Figure (cartoon, rainbow over the protein chains, first blue to last red):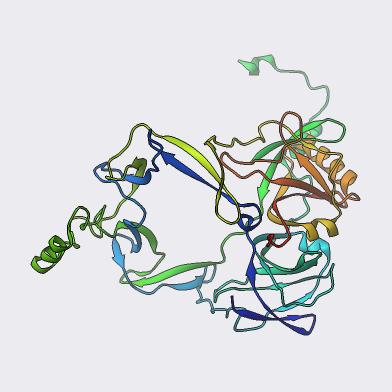
Length: 193
Length: 228
């Protein structure tokens, strides 16, 4: 895999990226259908007409605008303003900036991809956060660089920002209204019918 | 999704797990005669199912290509399609009624390690999930050891569960990340969805004045390199 330059705490580090997945660490699993003679079977999709068996590769995807198929180029716009979004360059083209971070910040990163950085020379226990985009795109991915006893790793995902929650629910409003009613008011049983 | 959480005092409350995925800030549009539209993805048939060369000798293929365009079937190619059900086909592309599903476990090198009848993994959060007195992690240890692949915010449903969660956050604030387990014995990793992967779960609690912030962090991967 191509090498990437990282600006970590104002120091340049160049490293190759080696993707690490669950399958690389623990292996994987697959579901297989077998006929009575234990021969593997092929999975197929049946369309709503029920007259065809479509296997992988028989179906592709195209774009539709209303009732019409289209080959027109799509552009990415801001959902709120409708303004065209600028394409952000890949981190391989523009060195991403990383700053020192606390463990608290890194613990809020929901990780989608993990890469090993064999070329990064960082001290164990060091934590940094920044952004990383493997490809050109319209949104930045959050990232963290973590060094432990196994090496230095780049974690890419989204930092979550959970907000503090207070007691702001209807039951309190109902409680206040009930307390505001006059005490000792006689019950009107006729209203129950 | 709803969960029932049992605290260290063996009291249980019903709570809600809130996904923290924000709404998308961008969308794809294309220019049409009626102005800008958001395109939809549509599945279409891209080749003759089974391939038109199946069961044909090379000379038959060559002859067919000279005579016409057998690879293009205008009744099928480009036809919008919606898959409604699944079938399993044998080598002759005939549907098979009697089949069994097996689950193969593969080593990181890709060799089959174990084969067993496929059994769907069921969610185990219908039963209360329990705080474990063992396995707590400091924040520093957690981020150095594990890859957190999903974070949920735990929120209250009523004033009783607010009090419950507020007190729990107060209690665990100094501990860091408390291990949460599922299952009847309270010793299983959590499986949130049917056919989902089991994950180890850690609960983090903070309070700020009369507000709390409680998050559930899930991991199914250690932060380490693969064995050589």
